[in-house]
Length: 194
Image (tube, rainbow, N blue to C red; front, side, top):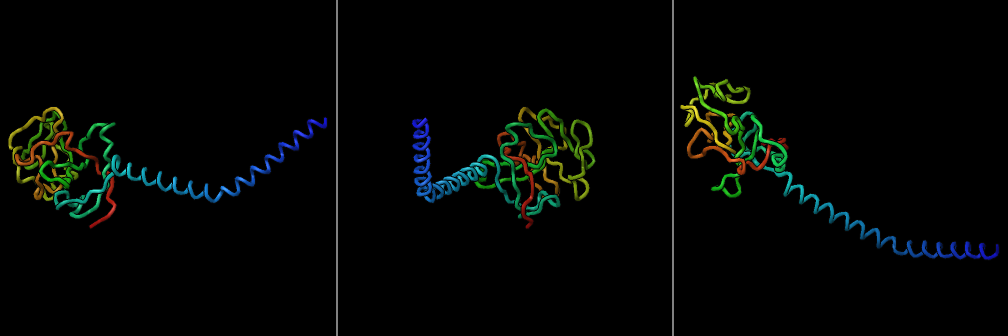
């Protein structure tokens, strides 16, 4: 029994020594943990902004009154990796000729859809499209290429601004249909009004 007691005493002495060593390293260890936490948070924040979310400033009046010129928006950049673009989504579009510029428009027609403007109203697949957002100034006066019915090709999307009288969009040959690769994200919220 004396041997057992001695082993127990030896064990408790080692434990005491370890506590003293830990208390000496504690401020340094806390400081290292703090810097690791800050570094990890910075890397995570950068990753979220770079790969998942981004802020975009609304350029011009083409989406009024839904979104005003100068409003700051957050776009989800990864949503369309896991899901399809849907009709009425408001999207940020990267235009090749404009390096640091995003257009913000509403998707009104999807690949394979037939689109036209008849009597000032947008028609998709022969049915009146929801004008809850579109044609805020009344009828669509400038038909552009939609004076005839057009059929969208594979990966082509037809986008239009809510303020149809002041929007450069898919109705015009200079803008054209938008490819899925040009859609950089879905607008998920407005964080700052102009």
